[in-house]
Length: 251
Image (cartoon, rainbow, N blue to C red; front, side):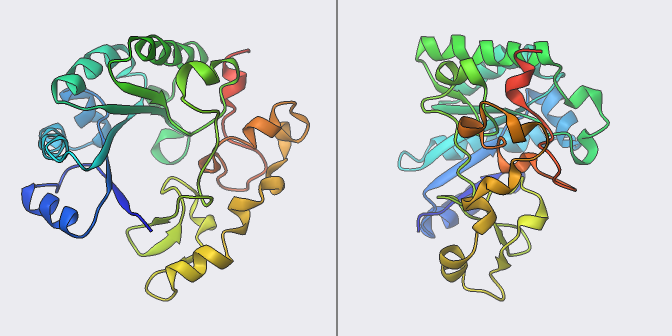
């Protein structure tokens, strides 16, 4: 199995970079959530941007590394997407994925973190325009189905790969898929279980998603394409997806 890592860049220095490459790391994703002020605000830690800037420089220096940036788009950094784009290109970044915040945790009741429908569309339009320039591999992330925008903001139609061809080991050793997924989806732990065996014999809720035809998804005409959006949309009681991206474009 090929492996990679997602990092906030805070502890990513040259020594760690070389160690990870030596251990066979093939891909790296680094989170950049704005320019200095907005990035540090979202991370809630002054100086975070300085660390992530250093990490990007190390990542782009390794030609064989499959490297990209992810940005958590919110109401504070929406208007600086072009500036972030220019900054990433100046650093030699080749690929950039944008995504929005699912209303869980401290984002649940913070209006600054959640885009309204018009802002969501503004973000998709920005991606669509930049993709036409073909100067960077920029796309909307795998978080959800976006209807008529699918071909404009992605290379391939929406598909949540969590538990299908992507597994994740969380910081405590828990075996799951995407790190954003609710902890109720955990399938085991590497300190007690063999990861390969877990991958071969479990992950049932990821691979048969018929259980999530609930709430508005039950009779939705787009369910075949969407399948309830990304699994990180299903938290808590799991009575319905927390966000319907497609409805944001039509309400």
